[in-house]
Length: 329
Image (cartoon, rainbow, N blue to C red; front, side, top):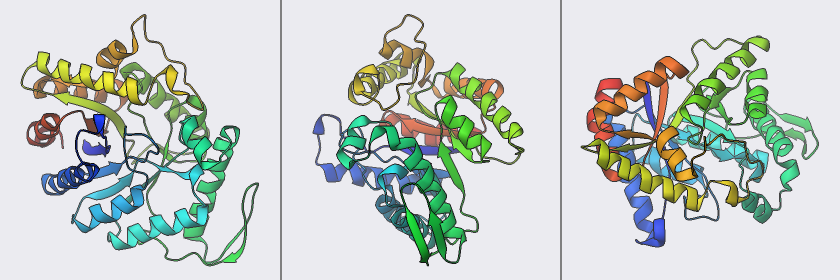
């Protein structure tokens, strides 16, 4: 099983200087490089202290300079907010500078505030995202780009540099069924989000496999990262307390029905409030032994073969690295 880390750049209550957030993240990434993780996947967000990383490509360049073997993933490049040629150039340049270590994950985004601030009509978010992805992929493969679409037109443009990898590995963030259907129908591998419940992960993985088969594609040999928030501690009770604090922070700062998502996916909370739902159905928490057991259950139920962890505390990251990774990686 592969293990990666979904790296947020959270600034809770702005308790430290913002530079400290980046310094700590880079130190963690250096540990990942030495410890055997497959990749760090960098989370892009805008206009929120939930995660203060508006450019995963700039942070990715720094991460590449401070590591030797770790793959550098984007989770995700919010494609609808970019000019597609600029996005193609930046990701390709990162791949060249990193020595061919980029995993490119692209996503539409879901925060209405981000779309409003960038002047992208929410009703155009999906079509802009898909057109941008198509242009980026063609910019990497075509010697000169000619393209006529709904939003962009290009004639005889040589996009440089090209990625070092041929082809560069690509994933689409897909949480909703329409997004999964679109990605599977075009043969894209997908990134599965950290907010789905355990049972939703299994259902969505099966739906994705059905979509691949219907489109004439095979699931064989694909890495399908499933993102999970993780809380580890020396006792189950302490880990649950970490999970509960993390769930409170998540629901207050970025998720939930009050946060004006462009598309609010229907969720079944089984009569529980949102914090309890996250603690019971979303976050992996417990001692290392307990979390490993739950990971193995996900392997059985949801075909988990690539776990993308988002540790909710420094202790969680240390225990993940020292006690979980050696047994699963």
